[in-house]
Length: 175
Image 1 (tube, rainbow, N blue to C red):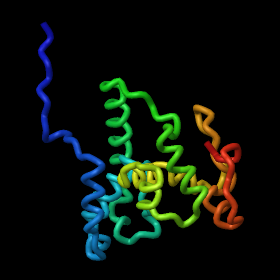
Image 2 (image 1 turned 180 degrees about the vertical axis):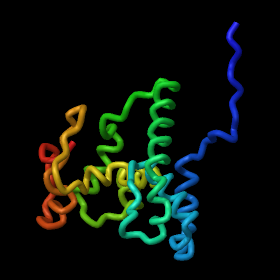
Image 3 (image 1 turned 45 degrees about the vertical axis):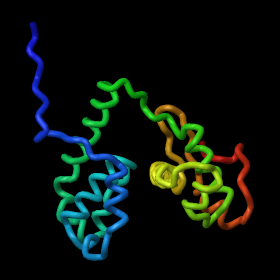
Image 4 (image 1 turned 135 degrees about the horizontal axis):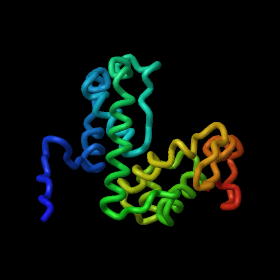
């Protein structure tokens, strides 16, 4: 009989997105100037939203630019392992609730997250996570082909709405 490996909590542990959001609610200027805090923010931002740290324009992030590829590789590997091990499917775009949130944002430039949550009857944390999750797609300035053929915008949907002041119909949305 094969012996099972013992789970070692010193190697990996769970850290929930809600915890990150709670910490961000108390973020201060001193935190933004702390290399350790910005490393935490970079790891959580990349893990949750695929958001790359801005090494060139953020002095506080610059010290860990050299070892970021190692961290990013570990995050990607961990994510893939978790998807396989837990039977998760790979995200192929917004689900129905996320699409409703995105549509509300696109139709109402400048709307606050709390108002979106109220209008749609959705928890404000879900609204926040959705906008952060798809921010890169919504703000993508150039088209980028994707392996699963999810279209991306040629100019930002945010700019189209805010410049024209008109609503975008579902057929012109980038997803």
